[in-house]
Length: 103
Image (cartoon, rainbow, N blue to C red; front, side):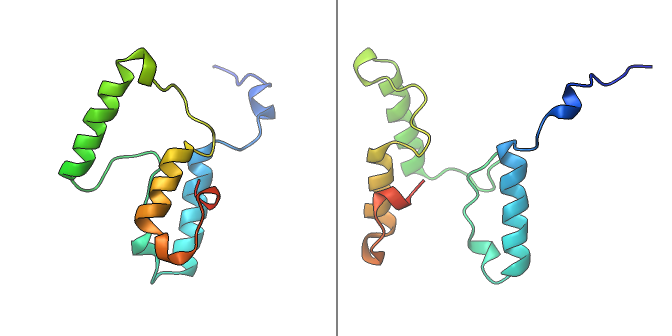
C-alpha cells in the first residue's frame, strides 16, 4: 500500500482557483439575484462562443507575441496597466473607478 509523504500534509491551503470558487459560491449563496452577473475569468471552460472582436484581439495579440519588440511574457500580478486602463475606459468610465481598482 502506498503511503503519503509526510511533507505533503504540511502544505497549506492556498491554491488560487479553489479559493476563488469558494468565494464565488459564498457570494452567490448570499446574493442569488446578483450571481448571474458574475463574470467568471477563472479556470474552466467558456460557456458561449467567442465574439468576433475577441477573436480579432486574440489574433492581434498572438501576432505581437511573434515579434521581439512587442513580445510580452508573464504580466504583473495585478495585470498590465494598459489593459486595466482599457477596462476602466470601456466598462467603468461613468462610475469613477480608476485603473488601480481593477485587478
